[in-house]
Length: 130
Image (cartoon, rainbow, N blue to C red; front, side, top):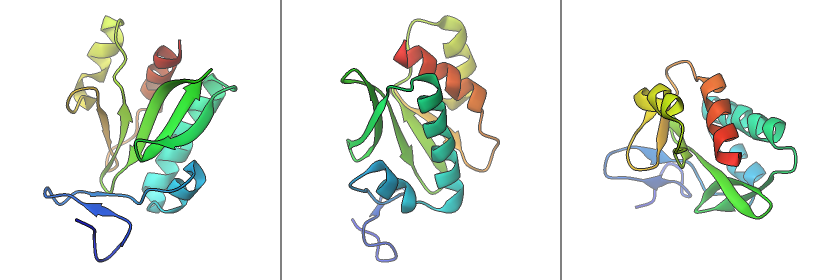
């Protein structure tokens, strides 16, 4: 169902609200609450810093970054957290470090009420793009 407070926002049964879907990554980010937008802006900077040739688009209703036509990471802003998809495979130390942030199959969830581990996110993005 759609939220009556934010008509382009989906309200899930759990009460968690996902932010509006935009036509571009800039539109998507502009529709977010300031804290969520700041975190996704920093993740965007990390992707571009690690992979200057990365392209961005909306895919699966969320910002998606690609390299040479291959999607490497999706990010989503919510009212209480941000999520990254997918979880990288093949690095046991990285997977161990990601343990507290694993939230379902292929999902990393970072609580906005806690410090965001940008160094860990940089490792994730590096692994996904490598």
